[in-house]
Image 1 (cartoon, rainbow, N blue to C red):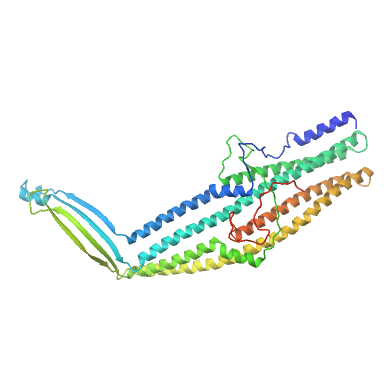
Image 2: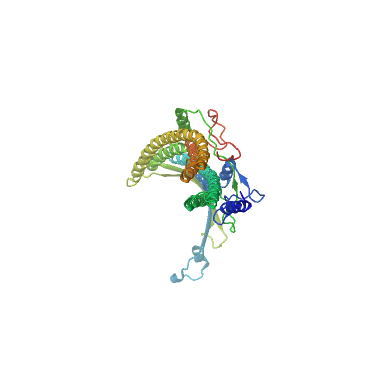
Length: 470
């Protein structure tokens, strides 16, 4: 190869690799201002910063206030009241006679305490309902956290997949660039036609377009993860995210059986516990509805200071204390209580149906994720050997083309087949990890979960650094 051809080859490679329309994957270099996260660190950030989780925590605080309000029914109520009045009796022409004035101006101050003694069980049921709602809010936090964990896993896997696809596309572009340079040299030497050069250039351009699409998908996946982690991008940054994701699409085998996973899911899914508590709340509400026609008894005690209207002095007063019982009985309410009881009973029956449907849905979710996981595991194994076969095919097609036994189209097809094999291997790993995330969601496997030991190797991610695509 002459010096001029060598320089032409170098310029072509540089133009195609770092030209105006093909750039490296938009992954910023590690620096102090841009943190590097793996999957486990993203999960930790999500559990702390995710908006949905923070809202669920506020809901727990609200339910705790409801419990305090319900418990107030058991405590006595103390009320301090005062009254000061003056009447205009000029129409009666009574004037300012002091004997009559004492009937016009009046004041009183009273302190009254009341205590509920018997409410037909309504007070006790309302307190129990408030506690159940607080417990339900705690369980709902687990359910929301479980959903957020799956979404974070999805987003991290999407970023890793897009990064791997960009790397695979760049490798294919490098192979096509080398082939383009080789065809250009053959054309300059009169050993091939202009058609072969243009055909190679078209294939190279198509591959560059796919690289640009992969880079755009990477940006979209980074935006989705930043939303889940509640991390804002800098206003001046267009393509560089506020973090770097480094992890691998690991596909660890596992030996857990389907019945074990289904049993684990039915025992751990918070949605089932929420529905169970809703049924219990409705059952207690039914008791409250039935207690509307039961007599209520309250005790009261009071002390009153008022103006002595038998005296002319405005400051003279009379003190008195009272104590007693107050009873009420709603004998007929126009069937209001009966209607409420019927409505609550219908809610109980509906919640029981939802509980059964949710149990079936959870079992189906586990089965679906398990089958997809097994299928993806087989695909990963197949694609692992297929890449090596495709690489051998590219090498043999080039040697055959040099010997005259193959055409340029055979070489280009073998190169594209290798790119397809690499991308399919990445997609197979992505399907595996998504199925694994769905299975972890189905059995409510938490990030810090140490309660249940799955069969080794466990269904949890490992903190590993990324490796190059096969």
